[in-house]
Image 1 (tube, rainbow, N blue to C red):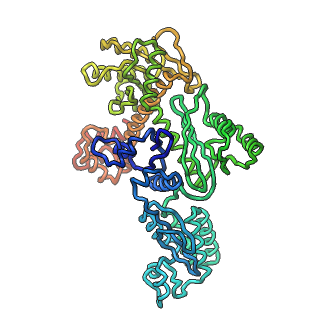
Image 2 (tube, rainbow, N blue to C red; image 1 turned 180 degrees about the horizontal axis):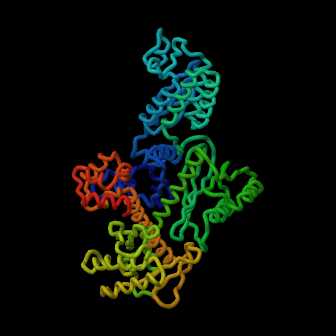
Amino acid sequence: MIGCDGEILYVGKAKNLKNRVSSYFRNKQQSPKTAALVEKIDQIEVTVTNSETEALLLEQTLIKSLKPPFNILLRDDKSYPYIYLSDQEFPRLAYYRGSKKLPGRFFGPYPSAASVRETLNLLQKVFNVRQCEDSFYRNRSRPCLQHQIERCKAPCVDLVSAEEYAEDVRHTVMFLEGKSSEVRRELTRSMEEASSKLEFERAAQYRDQLEALTHVQSQQFVETESGNADVFAVALKSGLACVQVVYVRGGRVMGNKTYYPSLKADLSIAEILDEFVPQYYLGGQGGRDLPQTIIVAEPFESQGALVDALRQQQNATVSVSSNVRTARRGWLRLAQTNAEQYLSSHLANRENLFKRFESLREALALDETPQRLECFDISHTQGERTVASCVVFEHTGPVRNQYRRFNIEGVTAGDDYAAMEQALTRRYTRLKKGEAKLPDILIVDGGKGQLKQARRVLSDLQVQGVVLLGIAKGETRKPGLETLFLEDTGPGFELERDSPALHLIQHIRDEAHRFAIMGHRQQRDKKRTRSVLEEIPGVGPKRRKELLTHFGGMQGLERASQQEIENVPGINKKIAEDVYAALHNV
């Protein structure tokens, strides 16, 4: 939460951001501190993480670095827990909270005590490093229960050599540093060596460690291996682009920034990065903090020249990478998630939506700004399970509870015109009966042919006052090259690629396409996983069970003769004929 002068007022996290933010603006009585915070809020910025754990770690990092005043006043400022590895001949792993003055190493911070204990429990199973108190350790004369259940190698009574124990400690440290893949490779080599020497019991121990490693906690990417990086990801949708920059310093995600570059042409992600990244570092922004590595979603043409320019201009050695793994791949995925989230929010922003509606009014020369749009699309696979979609947009964005799908039946497979006619007839017959409001503009995904079908349907149903608009893809089917039709005769027209009106039309067209494809896939998958027996009239669940039980499954039933089917209890001659015909396409 940011004040009008750019001051960071408060940093918070939530699984459901809408509910969390709304809680600050409710009409019920607020505490004086909360009311004081709300009065100062000018804007709110959001960062989306891959998990709740990463959100917790990122919140802790930002609070420590930014020191927002209302975090000090409004939330518990307790310290976060760590995993502590003591500095001894046989080191101990332990849960720790407090100042880090003890000799040894600290790993963390972790978001909660439960996560630390879960990690310690898993490490104990995999690497058998002791976790007992030093006073307990020094006074043992025989192994404790942890050794008996194979969670400790009992260094307290010299049942393990210092060298073997040190190797387990080294693997534990590597794992906590995020190098679990390296640990796995070392264990694999050790297992193969032991096996080649016919030391099968030792090989089995390494095998068990490898299996246990596959079940340990997932790696976190908000705070992990060291390194400084700027991470660039791009999201493209409906003619708009969003570039997300995530800043990583010392292995920690320190924040992110969002840009919406203006696209005057149809550009790929690589082309957008090729224009954006050099301008970001060389565009006169003096004093920009340069990282060791620039991570990008895709390689771009001028990245070599950018590295040379930064070396000459700022005497800095910077590398550019796109094919990244482990933690860096996690940073890139984090940036990509945020880019897509911010672009969706930008498209749904009410102010931007109203501007696009107003631009559409100007582009179509309408007397009034349209309030409601409907768009139809058809989806099928070579005529199979044809589904039509209807999506609705208003000034507030997509109205998803008013979306509708129509399963098209009784038309020639692949006849999109007949499918569109059936969907429009069913939809506007219902609207005439008052199911919902008529739209101001009806958009059909198609050219003059589909537009002609829509005009005939509305004329037959005597629907008036609805503007018809067809949208046909360009020759290369790339966004920005669409041709629009207001009439089913005569030439169409095109809008500028950066036109807000075109962006709105692309947005609703893409949403109709997505909704139609999703419905078609559901119907197609349902059919393909449906038994042939379910399509036969008179064969209900009980008879299906009798048939399958009698013949031991579908294969046995398919091999059976009509007479054999008729001998099944509950199956008469007519049903046996129908079953045999359905199974053999007779």
